[in-house]
Length: 336
Image 1 (cartoon, rainbow, N blue to C red):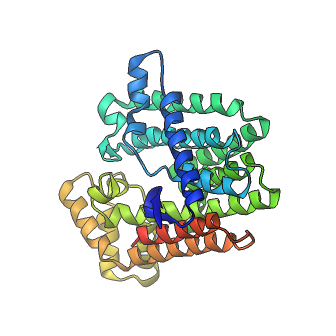
Image 2: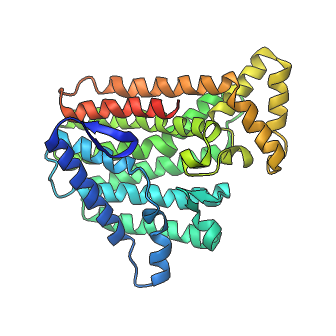
């Protein structure tokens, strides 16, 4: 077994391992090239998160999906660069909206240079992604545009909250399908599409990516509560502090409404208070970490990961498919 990519993914086939590693290396070079500017300050800001590292989860999916066609096709690596640039751009914007202090173990761009620079740097990355995308053809442009629309729609729906009468959990899962699932689905779609894989394979891998993306974000929700900053690379309970209700909180409120237990209601009241206060924030984290709502969120993560695994059933058996199945397991393991 050879370990490659995020989560300690192990690949049995040496040729596949070499292809994936070579592809990820090329993507890293492409990211650095795409974030260069004639203005040194822009280069520094644009490369801030690139150089901070990261799991490169989406480029890995592009490389694995490309194994179902020609993995050496010229559009594979550039499409992976496009997906990762888009993802990085959203992180700059997310950190401004969330007022996050840390990202990937380093000060966030908004902390270092202010909100305006962080937002504009994200816009710069979107522009560079679009420039690369234009060379990949009109179908690639359309796919990316549709995914970007879904991503922004998901962000807006999250900000607006569920309409009256809408189940908050269902609303939240729809939000995640747009915010996270859409771009992970595009990673799988681009890998298969650029490699010339059969249209049926492209569809299967797109459906897999959508479900895996939601599972990935749900695992992040669990980690935000359950982990420390060393494990997650960002400040624990960031969403709690900003009053953003992720799945563990939504499951808590659902349980409180259904059962009316005093301890659940008291915890909801604490979460609704001013969690910019460090003492309250620490107490909310402590109580959520041992609450059944966190375990329910873990079960939800497992459900989406299992749906992703099931979506792969029509694909031929091969080492690339086995690696995609492993990613489902890795996401579940990540959530504990």
